[in-house]
Length: 163
Image (cartoon, rainbow, N blue to C red; front, side, top):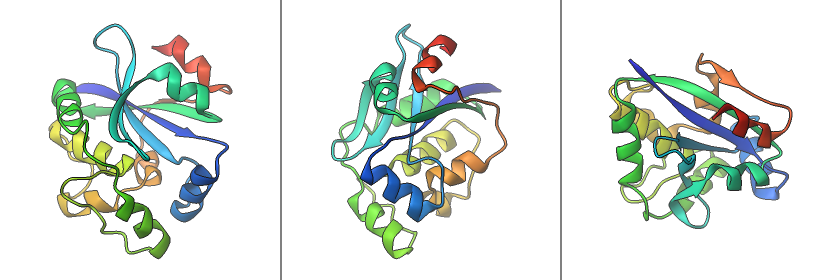
């Protein structure tokens, strides 16, 4: 078994507050951390851009809180390849509406909400965390509730010291 790290963040931002409120979560966003090339990058779905690759420091600069969580997978390379295969796909705006209306099965075939993408990519690594039919209902809180080792510094930028 291998491990892969997922970054959980929140911001002092109205959108972040809304997501945390409607998902009953301390976190509003999740990304996969890819530090295999020597420079830490995040792969994730962000509004309004969709699935993107961004430097870790960029996300941490915007964060008011952050944590890195390790997940056991069969193949970290398969998880990252799956997530990177979705780069350029649009953000799942219907998923945001699903948060508000609480009709949680919002996964479209060509768009992603952050936690949907992470749950799907982790399953591609050989160790599904959730039933396949539930991936479209996963929020950051569902991923956070799983029992995995984590690092949560008092200042988000301090996570750079752990990469």
